[in-house]
Length: 239
Image (tube, rainbow, N blue to C red; front, side, top):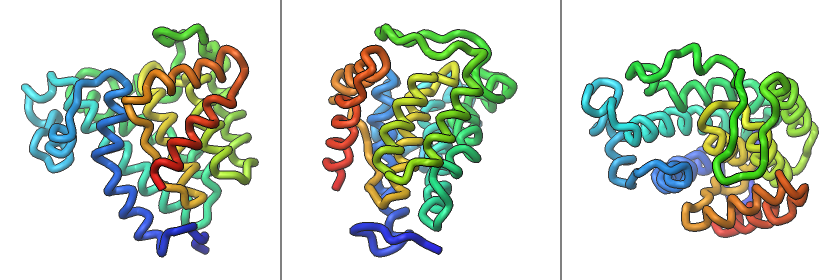
């Protein structure tokens, strides 16, 4: 059974709004991660006008590869959004599908020969550090248990906005992957938000410093309120 969506006439209408957010969302999410992208490049990759998988010159362009990976991951998440809107608990959907998201995010790097597919199997098996942060992510031996605990928490939470805030922060806190954690956290956040009919929410690169400071407060100072307020304001800005 489909669930009611506040302010949205149908699931198809909601998914159309997600599709319309793609270029804007990809630009800001990739820019926050330090990629040099433009909406023109994102649109060319989306339309097949720049294909880093088939063109040897394009394959050397990390920004085009990142755009292609973002597109492939976004498409999978959008399909999972539909599943959630049709009644499956968003936390269950995320647990089942987050591995496929991650593989999609870096699939162009595998096809171009930059990464071995084995590197995308499961979670990291080595320490990672976050540049500019005092937070040290979970020890690699504890990542699997930490992720399982995170999904247990998301599956038990009835509030989509609380799930979105917790999911985004917890995935970043655990840092289960060698790369792409920020993008994965934002995709998880939006899957949670969508289950309540909230709009697809983009964290803008202009707000990067405030965003990172709020995450640092949650992870280092055990104060999640600044991050919760930051996400709430970002959601309201999309409505």
